Image (tube, rainbow, N blue to C red; front, side):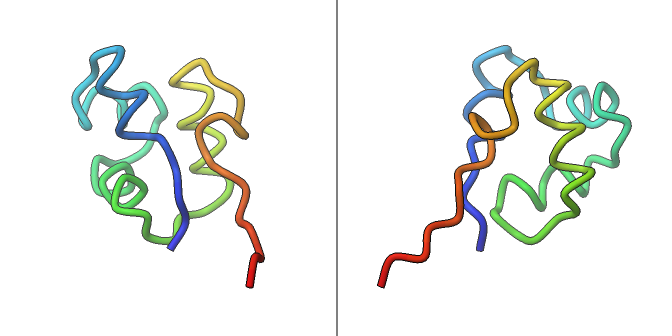
Amino acid sequence: MGKNRVKKFREEIPLSIAELARKAELTPQTIAKMEKGLPTRKNSELKVAKALQKQYKEVFLEKTTDV
């Protein structure tokens, strides 16, 4: 599962899931999947970061390979 800060930034603005989805030109279901940490397309993640006016790295934390 990917770790991200979509919900944190969305709630700070504040935006509903539907509002963020509209802004990012995605479905609310995609935003909900992201917030749950489920896999989503990189292109969708880039759209969400842009809609939140954040850098991709700020929103979607690097996947670490710590053992």
